[in-house]
Length: 630
Image (cartoon, rainbow, N blue to C red; front, top):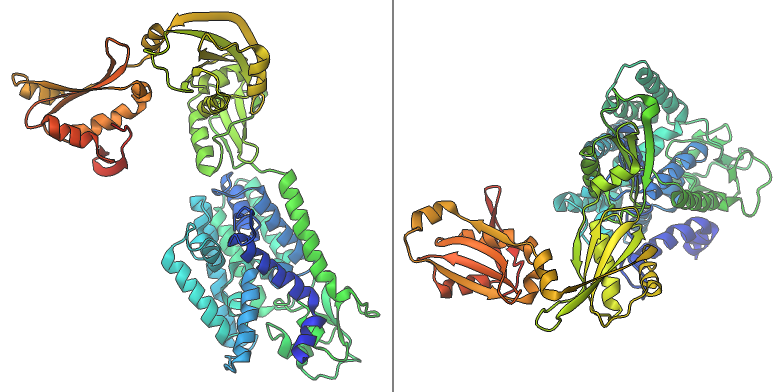
């Protein structure tokens, strides 16, 4: 009954702490029917702080990171600077797990190891989390990948060990978390957690501000001090302040002690997760570096000598809920800001030294659907570097847009778009010239279709309509030109096309001109043949009897991109002289394979029917799924 009464006394902590843990379990395991499994990193402030550090040092966000995580990291900073380590007390699932392990240890009468705050062993162990902090941030910034995912026990469990983990690191960290926390209260938080190191350092925010101010001034005057030096100094100063000056002074909110009501029973110290000796504080404020405002000491005090607030006054009924409420407000603010503000995934400039500053202008490209992560942003950046007159790019993954910095004396937004747009064609449904003799080609104009994949998306919409539409072809113009190849029996007007296109893109107009052609002419005019011959073998076997294996299929009209893989696969076999894709006399796409002994017809058929192909790439052989089904 006493334990239940104690939990009720400190209900804000347990309601929020266990509620967060329950929500994580329900959503990440998919127990809630119809719920989508969220990204376990989505609201992680540790990932957000790593992302912010990478952005400041490298001008980019680590892969999969967004402004939401950054805003959650900033919310954590605000909480620590103004109040205390609220995230540690009320939200962190690892803290909740350690609380549960402590209760299990007590339940089964397992003795714990006492490490007194300020003892020699305590000071030595506390340096570990600062070493972890340096390692994790250094590796993250250098690789632009969250290194903490390799060893974070929460991430490993939340992803079912299927995330971007290093298995042995994850297993070791989970074992250390469990065994260490059973042996020593809050072992992970006190000695291993890098987020704890950040939070403890930020409690001395005045010194942190001075450090960053010195670094900023040095950068302004051109000292070019490596960012890793700043990181190292932050870790060293934070550690020294924690172990030699464990009482930060500049937070607004504290656990407050009423000396006249205190009988020095020691229950508060015993109940404190970090075993802070509250009897040593005589100034009314419990300003120990480890204090998280969790409220355990307040709940333990039978004389009501402890409370939470700014200054000692009459104890209010709801004052114990203030830290939990502040936590909810700060998390909500972080989520709101993350939805309103977006940092660029990459922000890079190049070769601007010889450009007249007034000529540097910015244009925005929206609707870039291939921009989904850091990797795709870097691919886009590499493409932009090849465009004459472009000198920088900011990529926004969530909005799938990019701001392009360009020299207006060299190029223009229209020229940039033309330079990066690749005209393409896309099959909507199969066209058999034996069944369909004539075609009509209608032209529509669209906006918002800037990438090759957009034509595929439009083709899917047209296919869903059930109309006899066979191909789409795009040509760059402003607005974009889309040619729709369809059956003459389909009466497709401007209103119909507008209704389809507007589902995902912007419809501009339909051209009046309609082109009529035969299916055979269309196929021959648009068909791209393929030819690969192994000259050394042709010279060697030129006088031998040569054979051809021929396969015709209307579905081979889209085989062009797969032919290099097929020729690579077959060329691994002795006797193959050449591989061709062409049209036969009936305008049907045909694959022809030229060979001599020791290759035979039976062996070739066997090779073509295999589900996997062995190809050679950069001197190494690898297995890939068959690109063409025979």
